[in-house]
Length: 262
Image (cartoon, rainbow, N blue to C red; front, top):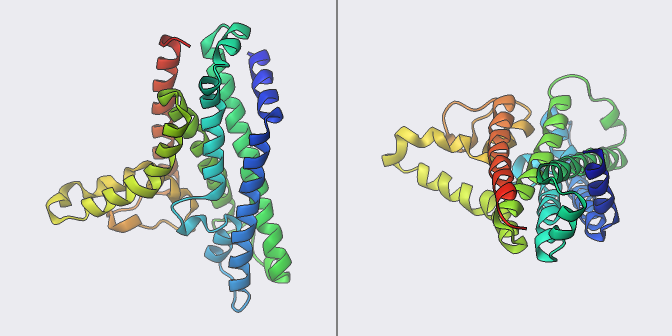
């Protein structure tokens, strides 16, 4: 197992797309955080302002830049194996398929976690450069900032693993990339509109259990109700809901990977 993990880490580290996706994640976060920080210079800061600043506007956007780019990384980690027919060489070197997929899962999760932590550091650095002493005067250990930071890292990691699972299910890079963008940008907003119809009132609250809608509850400063779905999910229950979707898709991917031909 250690050999398989080392193989995947070396593969991720030596592929240029990994570095480009990490760099784009940090640049996107830094640019958005800078725009937010400039807008915040005029007034006093509260926890919600800093949460938005640190996460690059994640609270108000259906797409979190590092989550998007790390989801692409997850897609490529397995999708490229099929696209370039290198999966046969991988399985020849490591015949046990469960170890191959477990190693890919751990490597992608680790890479996504590192990028998420670095993007938080970029957000803080940009905020300090623009706002100066206002950033230092905040009660960093109080309120919900530590929890939001942890939720942000979890959200990015879960998005990356979702990309990996979709790549394993589709075995096609374009299809997996389209799916990872369509779910938060098209599918969930459309379902939110549909569930708003009066005829669907009895099942309206089901909308808060959609994967990205639930997952974004980890990023809110306080418990809030998304899109009028009734009683809101807590950050913990939202994170667990998104984790359940990812775990189910990974399990399905695992089952298909073990049974289908390379």
